[in-house]
Image (cartoon, rainbow, N blue to C red; front, side, top):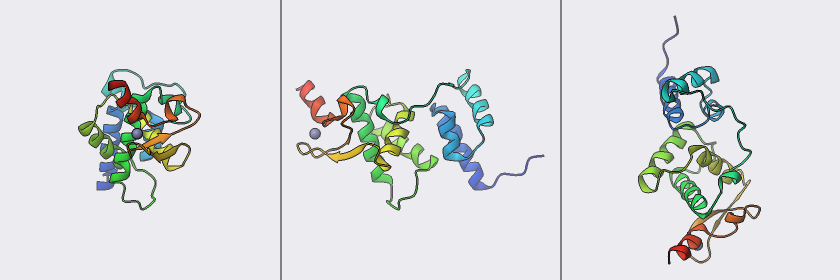
Length: 163
Ligand SMILES: [Zn+2]
């Protein structure tokens, strides 16, 4: 018979369940929660009635930056993350990702891919991509000179389109 889970383990597995429900890829949920991939894959099949995707995960947030709107969404997600983060420098936790995700859904649109959101936080934190303030509108955004849509502020770009 399996041992009774501690409150921390219960909470960890509850968060993993929610992240799987949001289609965060199994290897990332495994990385964040330390729960073995096998039960995570099983949970995916239960929740989505299909096998979890097997494709290779991207190396960075870059392939998710497909246009100014995507960059604006990812940048606002990272901005919320930094507002919630108490700045103690610890690595991002599964519970934190879920909390920021729920806040982002409340204030913005929820078309964002949670996998992209995870890469955005990870890459900004590890300085794989830049994080800078727009000199015109003062909003923080993900800056990446190697991605055409991430060379300038997405919020100013969108404001121009809609003006
Ligand atoms: Zn701007």
